[in-house]
Amino acid sequence: MTMPHRDLLVVLASLLAVLIVASAIGYALHRRLSPDGQNAVVENLNDRIRAWWIMVVLMGLALIGGKTGVTLLFAFCSFAALREFITLTNTRRADHWALAAAFFIVLPVQYYLVWIDWYGLYAIFIPVYAFLLMPIIAALRGDTDHYLVRIAEVQWAQMICVFCTSHVPALLTLQIPGYEGRNVLLIAFLVIVVQMSDVLQYIWGKLLGRTKIAPRLSPSKTVEGFVGGALSATLIGAALAWMTPFRPLEAAFLSLVIVLMGFFGGLVMSAIKRDRGVKDWGHLIAGHGGFIDRLDSVVFSAPIFFHLVRYGWSAT
Amino acid sequence: MRAAGISLAGVLIVVVARFITAVRGLWDGVAPTDEQRIYFANHASHGDFVLIWTVLPRRMRFATRPVAGSDYWLKSRLRWFIGCDVFNAVLIDRERVSRANDPIRIMTDVLDQGLSLIVFPEGTRNATEARLLPFKSGLYHLAKARTDVPLVPVWIDNLNRVMPKGEFVPIPLICTVTFGAPLRLAAAERKQDFLARAEQALLALSPKATAP
Image 1: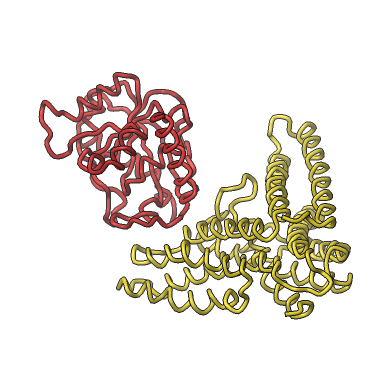
Image 2: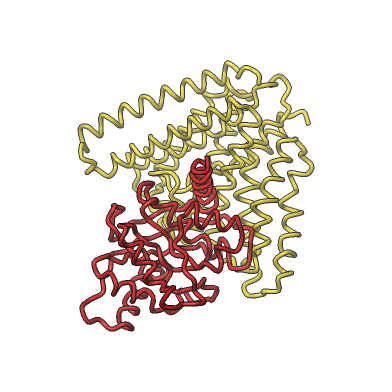
């Protein structure tokens, strides 16, 4: 393993500093407003900060671990997300082998292809091969009840949870002239912009939020929160241009794309939750719902970010 | 050495169960305490008592023994090891019930040592579309034999989709194990009334009971 790049260490140290400040504020609020845990907002905030610690430490270790670390981390995230997604679908007994293939063949193969950097295959493996082979496996079992719904759900689950998510580690395979050895910072950039956008939308929404954007999907999202969060996250993205191969204006544009995709990704995943009558995808992280609740914005922005960077900056 | 192997296997089974099902225990009407209890659960898969075991706090695991059919668990060395050594199952012969081999007697002997039991009153794995098979009378006879031990309903949700009867590759899906408020046999309660009450108490814990 090579020494992690200095820029990465700077980013991780800054994140730790932010978290330490956040934890200190959270503790002070807890002491002043909620010593016995009676203030739900403060307790929820502290749960979130604790979950942030876990996520930053895991992300940090993965980024320091380089390609193997990042690929393994996101393969596990894909696994956990797929587990949450399939739990909410209408699968039947006859889908057993198709589902086993999704978890134990499609997922590992996709991440292996990303790991060995076979772009020509990982870019079409799920949209073409899995898309055509899975319904065949399901059809062979002969159960035609809700057949189209069942195979569509499984394909959608694989596209979202495996295909899209795998574009985060795929960022490491881009060959950008003058940026060699620093690709993990692209992942840090993507994740920081997405997560800052989520947090800032929450904060702007709490401060100014009045007009609901999509009251049926997500009652907490407001126009004011969205605009404020999107603009401030775009500014943060522009300020992070030093860690990317982009100029500040380019970084701002890419951040805006990431933020918009992330926001609408969150809405889409909320629509699915409403459809299924659940509030959260899972219960893995206290205060954060399930894996998909945390990943939804990254999942929607990662493939677009990947292809924009590949088209505009990559040598291949 | 052997003890280490058994506890290692126990840890391994719990890790695999969590990996596949991310199982959560929901204590809804009863707390995880050391009180002696008879847990009665729905039965869809051989993994049922693995999940209950996984969500029980560690110290309760060793004071809780599942009741299982000897016809299945004595069939191979591996099943013997998992059933008898790891889970310390109380094996009963479902085929040849006689006075010399009275399953209720075997279970009350275990209760008299102060241990808790996990029983599956449907008597067999439910492979039907019905959420619950009609209870066999064993639960009633057990409750009658030890009226002081509370009966706790335990609903295991989704495990039938993880591993349907006859499949051997598990599908990772999120499962929950819900523990409900305890029941006791009322004085002079008739057998069918008690069994119906126990079935209702268990079904009420199913998430589908509240969903539209």
